[in-house]
Every structure is written in structure tokens, then in C-alpha cells.
Length: 266
Ligand code: MG
Ligand code: MG
Image 1 (cartoon, protein in one colour):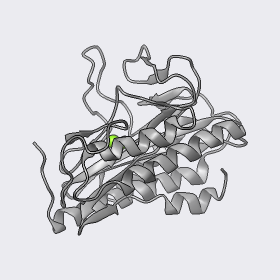
Image 2: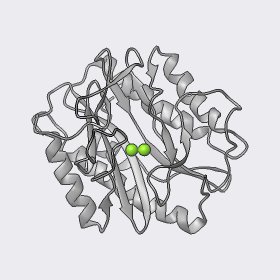
Image 3: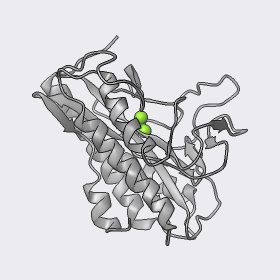
Image 4: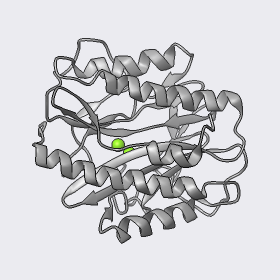
């Protein structure tokens, strides 16, 4: 069931999402070779709690029966890990990329956004993957207005990425968001123009392209959380939470503070 949001609810969602963006900006300040993903997680959890919110991901129930609840406050997915990487004590290396997905629960509403960071000097072809994935997110967002359909969002993302030979992951998708982190509808990063549910004012969704440099086939790590590319080539993940608001897409999270810190790395 799709729950359309009121003006007041959209503003609460914006607050939760701006806290996610601020958290990712804190991470941008310290991402460098030698830092561990556990250090990023510790920083994120403290920052979120210091701002009166709860990290939504911590303790999030698993979709696979053999997995325990998610043990950390952020997902840190390095290189060939696409999504749901569990933070650990392995230092990041020069040339790595790390997708940091973050969720907050603030005043009854959820924030959810992800950014793929460069660690030191990253190869030009990998930076191109990041650039294209981020561009595809904004193309998907640009298709999110009343009168269009869900398939228009997915088609915009898919066409932009596949035109450059990249893979679009099928097994994991974006989602509605509100009082719950995952609400209806599912928001695939692939699809056909003019297909799927009609988009309406008040619809709040997370759009999150997960794009692979090679094959789009994915595999599950033995921890039952991390999802990798099967060919072990890199993958990128960018996510914004948006509202369809007053007849157009309104981006509730923001990359601006991250990009201000990171500069023009790619
Ligand atoms: Mg997310
Ligand atoms: Mg999400």
C-alpha cells in the first residue's frame, strides 16, 4: 500500500534526510587511505545520536533467514561490494572506492541516502563509473513528476548507464519511504517508459542506482549481508530520498555538503 505524505510529513522527512546528508559529509571529512570502515561507522553512529536521531540500519532485520540483524549504523561497500557491506577493521587503500549508505530515524520519519567516495587516487575508469552512476540518479529524479510512471524513472537510469556499457543490478531496488525505511512501491533502476504505477504528489521514494562496471550479476557474501559483483569488478551506489511535491521532484537529501568537502575529485 502506497502512503502519500502531507506537507508536514514531507518536511519531517526532509529533516531526517538532511541529517543523513550531514552525516555523510562528516564521513567525507575523514575518508582516506588507512582509515577503517569501522571508524566511519563509529563516527556516523555518534553523529546521528548526538543529533537526537537513531541510526535506522543498526539492528535492521535480515531478509535472509540465516543472517542476524544488521550490526552497524552504516553500510560500507568497498570496490566490488555493491551494497550492504558490514564495516570492519580493514584499512581502506589508495585507489579504493567505498559506498556509504546511511539511514536515520528522526521525529518519526526515516532518512536514507548513499554516496560512493573515492579513497585517495582512483583510476579514471572507476571515476567514470561513479560519475555516470550519479548522473543516472539525477536523470531518474528528473523523470519523477506527476503524470509520469514508475517505469519512467527506471528507464531513465537504465538507459544512461547501459549506454556506457555498465550493468544495472536487478535484484535490489529503491523504495517508498516514510515512517518506515522501506515502504511501497518498489522503485527499480530499470524499466519501460510509460509503464508501472502513476506518480502522484505526496509520493516519497528513495531512488538508488546500483551500477556495475562489468556484468550486472551479483552474489551474496558468507555473512548473508554483503552483495558483490560476481565478476569482482567495481560497483557504485548513489541514493537520494525525494518527494513528488507541488508537481515536481523535491530532493530531500543533498550531496552539496559532501561535494563541498570532496571537491572535484571526479
Ligand atoms: Mg540507503
Ligand atoms: Mg534505500
